[in-house]
Image (tube, rainbow, N blue to C red; front, side):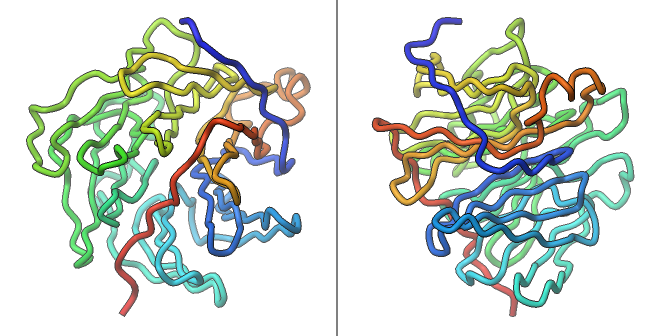
Length: 301
């Protein structure tokens, strides 16, 4: 796989997360948020001051969304959707998800351009069967299952700049799909965007920048790839750790790429060789611009 440019990411926070994920930039507070899923923690870093905050969750935190209230997040916990008040720490359940399937948990999630929260589930069993689904939390707080194929590990959820198309993947299959009729709901309008089978690693979290390029964390491959709108690889960012998990383009100038990483599945020998594994990384660019993270457009009553 050829790339036109290559950069290196540097450690920003040595957070030692077992499974760092879900990184998001909040332009209002100047903070980078991310989760340590298995550690049941939400982290935040104020970029200008270096001040770090951590909130302990009542269960594993898989994904989350900013809202129009700077003190409230929408959480995608392992088993449920919930509101989280950053001031009080209160967690209020909205929906229990797949209660009849104890072998699944929530995984990736992001708001679409209309401000609705789209997320997926995964099979936690070693067999990794394709029993996971994709859902959308609408602005009236109703929950609907999207007419997408079942997956073993839902990932790469992000949306085109105009909001008409949705990207998603099954990390096990190594394919990122593009759903061109996301707004219309015609599931026959799904096509392969990037085929990564045979390449090192697997596609994990993803985001779209202001030019419509897709940034994909490549779990197990020590890199983040940027795909052009036609699915070709435009550049890569390399890391000194093997398991990048999610990526966000933000910072005050929207020209920094933030990358979460993980220690999960690494042997003691591998951990010794990757002492920064589980940290939050970043890289700065002169020719890249991100978009503000879309906020969930409903709030607690």
